[in-house]
Length: 116
Length: 115
Image 1 (cartoon, rainbow over the protein chains, first blue to last red):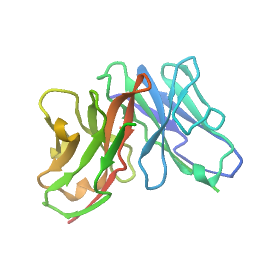
Image 2: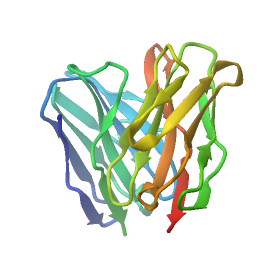
Image 3: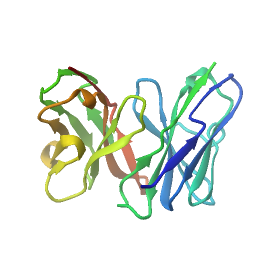
């Protein structure tokens, strides 16, 4: 079965710093997404990572705070910039695979971020 | 705007009890519907899905869900829960928004099953 790998799995960071989260998939995907799951809450879509172009951000999320790259079909990064304690969340990568039904999204294990 | 409502945030059951988790969505167009499950310490997994056809869909581990279009509902059921069903359950709708499909999640229901 296809694998979605996220690194790091968890981190503790100081306020004002930035963290880059990586998402690597072992099969070709059509779409890649980044979600945030704040403590005790549901998943919120941050942006759709577009290959070779700027990501499409949802309302309330901006590129300066959450820059995203997707240099190829199977890899993407999300950076959480100038962090504050409010950014403490689980960040999840999600994909749709080329080889699987198109409207099903699969999720990585997530990156648990704590900001002090 | 599209939204998904899950009626129960916390549910506590004894083993062998029956389970029904409510999910309602607001969207007038064609939707794909999903239930995802997140077991403690694990990542989000697909439990079942509805795209079209028979509105009663069966998923893994004995779960099923019924799509009732007139009620905009997609409730999750299991006749007899087990301790291993302790998890958080998320209803999600894939709907078209802003020119592309977007997966929208409900707030989640945390289920605790006691032996």
